[in-house]
Length: 300
Image 1 (cartoon, rainbow, N blue to C red):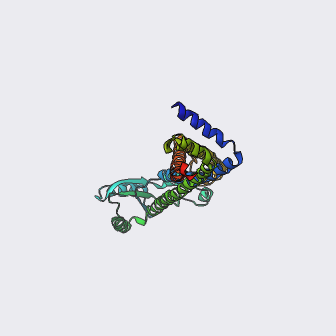
Image 2: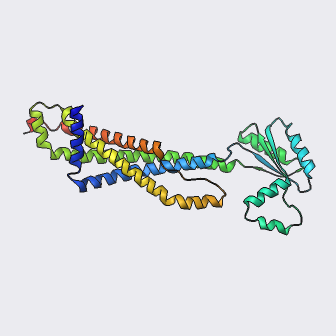
Image 3: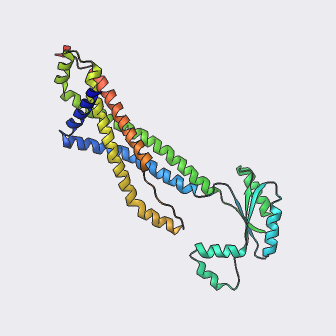
C-alpha cells in the first residue's frame, strides 16, 4: 500500500512537469467526456418534462353548445356505465371558462361574447390502450347525439416518447464512440511517456522488475488523466447548463410550465468521474501491456 501511494503521487507529480502537454490532453479528454455527459443530461431533462404529462390515453368529448349543464352531467353519468371506459371526468362550461381565462392569452376576447361560448367537455379514459380499440371507441363516442367532436390526445405524447427513446439510443452510441476516443487518447499519451522512460524501464527489468511493477506508475497516470478530465467535463456540462437555463425557463413560462432544468447532480457527476477514471485505467492497461512486451533488456 505504501508503494502504491508513493507511485500514485509520483505519477501525479510527473504530470505537472509538462503542464502544457498535460493541459492539452486533459482538454481533449474533458471534451470527449462532456459531450455524452451533456447529451445524457438533456435526455434526462426531456424525460422529466414528459413525465409531467399524463401518458394514459384520453378521449376528449366536446359536447354541442345546445347541451345544457344538467344534460351534460347526466350524459357523463351514462358514460360511466360504458364497459370500455375506466373513468369519466366532466368539465362543465363554467369550469372550462375559468380554466380558459386562467391559462389563455385570449381571455380578453371572452368579454366580447354575450354568453359563454365554450362547450362542456367530457374526458373519457379507455380501458384498452391498443391503437385499434382506441380509434374504434373514438368513432363510437363521436356518433353519440350529444357529441360535437371527439379528440384522442395520445399521438403527441407517443411522438415525444419516441423522440426520447431515439435521443437515448443516440446518446449511448455517441458515448461509446467518445469512450473509445478517451481510450485512444490516454493510450497514446501513455505510450509516449513509456517511450520517454525506456532506459529507466530497461534498467528496472535488468534488476528483476516484473511487467506488473513497471506498469503500475503508468496505470496511475491513466487514472489521473481520466479523473481530472472527467472533473473538467463536469465543469463544462455545468457551464453549458447555466448558459441555456434562462432561455429554457422563459420558453417553459410561455407554456405555463414550472419545469426547471437540472444538471448532472451529485450522482451524475460521480458517475462521470467513475467512467473517466475507469477509461483512463483501461487505456493505460491496454497501451502499456502491449508496449512493455517490446521493451526487454535483450534489445540493448
